[in-house]
Amino acid sequence: MKEKIIQKSAEMFINLGFKSVTMDDIAQEMGISKKTIYSHFKNKTQLVKETVLSVFHTITCGIDHIIAQEKNPIEELYEVKKFAMLQLKNEKASPQYQLQKYYPEIYKMVQEMKFENMNECTVNNLQRGVSQGFYRKNINIHFISRIYFLALSEINNETIFPPQQFPKSMIMEDYLEYHLRGIVTDKGKEILNQFINTQTHD
Image (tube, rainbow, N blue to C red):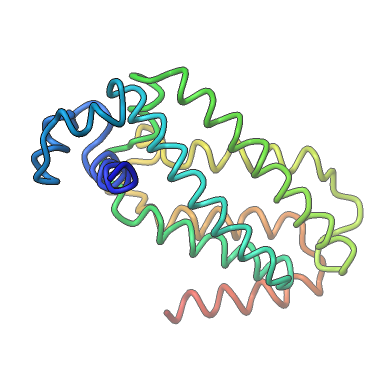
């Protein structure tokens, strides 16, 4: 039952936001009593924390699975982008910013986990790209990995990127091309252009 509550909560938080969804809403949606939810979670803050960690774990495992396939580094980034978009396709309520505003300690914890995980993945991707001749040898790997993290952390900021003007799929696509064009070699550019042409024709 606990896992079912977490799954339903994740779905509702992503769709409606962390603030607006109440324990009553979750209980009603699941057809269970609020008492049942409180038997697993002492309060909404604990439910939010465990739900966020569950979503983080799901996304991390999915990305690890993609990396384990040992695709070329450019293809790997496009596969990760595709997976991330699939995970966030129902995101309508800017949950990241609600989490930051109403549950700052949980937000801070998750940001630190995200940075540690994403930085490791990005550094690995950059190092493989350099060694395989897809990325330029003289790039500053640890600087670029941090810039990449910062950009992706702010890409959902609707003040900077109003969704009517900047649909999420377009931002992700354009940013990934922007990131890669700055670091690829001629060999890497050939692979990148193949992916850009594929995306254009989809």
